[in-house]
Amino acid sequence: MNEPIVARHWLVAAAPKAAPAIATTTVLALARIWNANGAEHSVGNAVLMAVLSTGAAAAGACASVGHAGDSTIAGTAFAASGGLALAGVAGYADGMSLPLLLWTLATAGAYGLAARYWRADRRERVAHERHVSERCEEHAHIERVETLRATTQIEVARTGAAYAEQLAHALITRAALPGFDPTALERAGLPELPTNERKSA
Image (cartoon, rainbow, N blue to C red):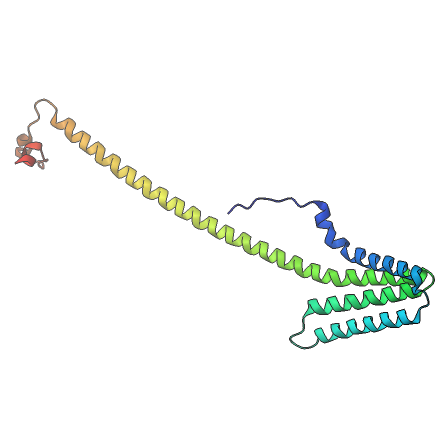
């Protein structure tokens, strides 16, 4: 019932928080490398990225429509659309001001979307921990009650055994006293106690 406590490294805990910034920065860096290798002012490349970005956005819109919509697929498709748009603009533009502005907007949007999932995940984790804690407390209470009951039964049995042992010892001691006469007890009107002779008879 006692689970081992595992301490997570701070890098493991911080990696999900840094993922949106790392993703948008990687897209910006690759787009600028693409820009330096011939994508600057290339209309064909810009049209290709625009078509891909529009297609990803349409896929995200289709995935989020209706009762059977999947928010994970929709979020992934919209993120891909934003990344493609950022890559297209950063690859086409000749300066860094517009790509950096789009990178800032994309990073802020990515953190806005990720924060929603982080809150939902934190709520589920807290609810799970609370449920596990309640179950542990309930089982611990039942365990304490059963321990008390078993201890009481053992003590009662031990007391009964001690009483029987003391009674047997008293009877044996009394029978061994000099001048003990069971018939005198009967004549005095006292109840007769069993003796070895009467048992053997």
